[in-house]
Amino acid sequence: MLLTNRQMPIITADTEEEMKDFIFKMPTRVYFGNGSVKKLPEICKELGGSKLFVVTGPNVAKSSAMAAVRETLDSAGVEYVVFPDSVPDPPIEKVDMTAKLFAESGADMVVALGGGSPIDLAKAVAMLRTNEGSVADYLFGGSKTVANPSVPLIAIPTTAGTGSEVTAASVISDTKNKIKLSVTHDYIIPRAALIDPQIQLGTPALVTASTGMDALTHAIESYVSLNASPMSDAMGMYAMKMIGENLRVAAADGSNIEARANMAVASLIAGIAFMNGGLGVVHGIAQAMGGIHHTPHGIANGLILPYAMERNLPGNLKKFGDIAVALGMNVEGLTAREAAYAAVEAVFDLREDINVPKTLKDINIEEKDFQGIIDATMPFRLLAINPCRLVENDIRGILERAYAG
Image (cartoon, rainbow, N blue to C red; front, top):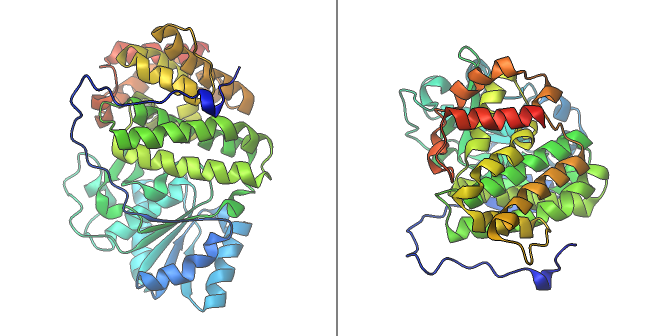
């Protein structure tokens, strides 16, 4: 039985503890609506751009989304050059090469069109135009810190999941060391984001489902993070509710514009939530899986999420109970632990309905691969704000559960 809006409990801050200090960031100007991509020329003008460097991938470059961007720029007489060769989890070498092409193009503004990887590539390229060196220098643990503001960047997401259009991180692959790392700085946050549900209508069902699980993971991990605040909580909770109500429909019927629009907004809100509240062990493991096995990020998150939630329940039973309610579970009469576990059940049910991979075996990860994933997960800096303190055996336990299913 699903709870109606009138039955939704009012979630309030714990008045027994003094509210901690927090900072809330949302510098990106967001333009949402069907056909909002047509605003691109006027936004470019506002930001002072005279020639655009459009970063996208080979599939999107041939899509109706790219056609819409070309049409609106051509109609407005805006000069641009298209870089159509973004790849999933862009490696250091690809970033540096693209940055060189950008510098040689004469363009003074970057537009990212695509999912998380093209946006991440565009963030790094825009940053390197004003900061010397290789992107490797700026990755976590590198020798340099981003010192100068990037050239203006406008993000146009074609999927509803990463939230990268409003965040301060660019995820890059170090293929030599088989690890994914991030450049993280406020200077790389896009100046504007155009959220146009119409250009997301052609997204395949599996991509819709897996990117939706990515957005859900952002919302859940930010909500239970030790770095959460009332602002990020509000964003995370509303994103969860929207995803619970719309992801099934968006994955089952990609032409449903209402579901597409709601998922686009949910992904955006979840991105704002995690930029401020942070992430946790799910993303640590997913990032390790991506670096070693090239597992698509949304699929990795969807695989790991319910098992990591099980392990994290003791860290905040109340908040996990809130998650269950947001995802439509009836927790009336349940104990705090039962209500918290209902959140895990809700995620299992959602995964089943949208037909994403369920076990590590489904994506050809074997038990012999576990130690490498564990070794790559433990240095993940956001483990420090995971609701439970985890050691190697905890990561192994999560992987074993995800393997067995």
